[in-house]
Length: 261
Image (cartoon, rainbow, N blue to C red; front, side):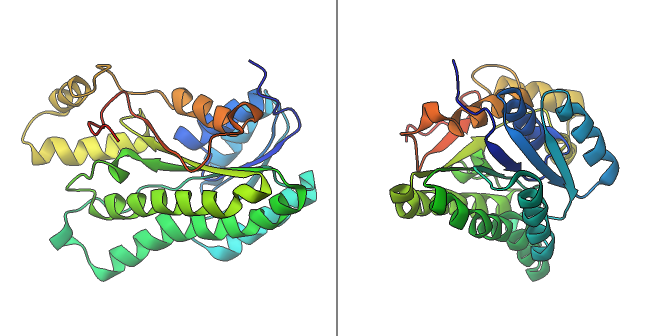
């Protein structure tokens, strides 16, 4: 299938590893010019080199929780590529803890890192998309938006809010031929999954290996997802083939979410 993405310009946040990098790789493979950002300079350069094998890529050091870094990243992208057609927002997960163990500072940090960067990045790119009457925004979030998890209190709260934001943005931007969607990731083999496994196996009093076996058994497909499997769905949502898909929060979770709606 031709996704008609050749020479489109995509900004992919936090793309030095994991799902972010998988999205950047998938978009580059479809002919996009890709701009990525991340905090870790070594990992950012390694990702840039890997993506460059597939296409034109710009790598800019940036912390997505810092507004000035986001503005600088956008400016560098415009200097290099001239405009932005596609935005993929992405963040690391907020603190892992139950409600009564969380401080105001942790809540504030979670809002800044998980919600406000999405708001700020979207505000930066939307005017240009409106001028060109074409745009794709995809928010990378989590299955906890629909199926909350006790020790992911902040994430469960904010990811649900991002689904609301996705629908609201889609409603307001559709007239400008801008689609806005979210993908709700399940158990994917990333650093975040490793961190959660360390917390959960100790809470449950079982070995790490036993936890992984138990977690995989709870997935209808009986396995964890690969970052590539998310990246390729994101590339589709960013494409001309998905031009009538907007306002959707799409689970990519192997069937973990049990709700029918």
